Length: 192
Image 1: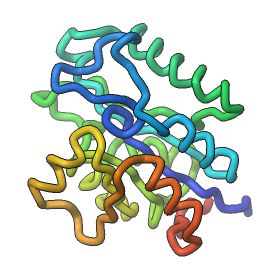
Image 2: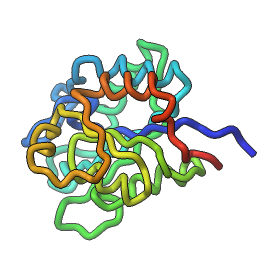
Image 3: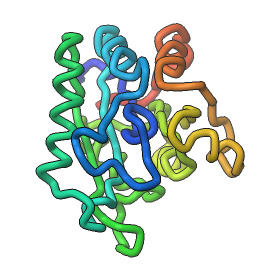
């Protein structure tokens, strides 16, 4: 049996980088939030496996193409590489809100894809998002919901309807601080 992994799943827009109601459509518009890249690097240096699950309906809407999406992720990878870190997996949904699919959050398909990639369960795995749909999808796979107040986080908190037990943090750096300092918050799932 393989050793368990410590997995965390992050949303992208509003958690790692600035979000926009007009969508992030280009590499120039993809701007990391203060402290976010360092926070991911700290997780990696502490032995965590870091995955990203992101709805990217701008593809379906024609705001950008897959090459641009990959270029945004290349920019993220380059910033992490400067800190001797990298992401372990990125799952993204290209569909718009009118398409019936299993991958667009609040559906759990992106998280299930990540679980399948690593061959793990997601019970207790922390999922960090800025919207109710990120966290709703998380609880559908028994993951632990963490809300950050960046991006759409403040609006999500004010709107209510967060899953019971959702922990709230000012930003990704603060959520990572909690994960790294609190052994009780380590995922119980993530075993093969």
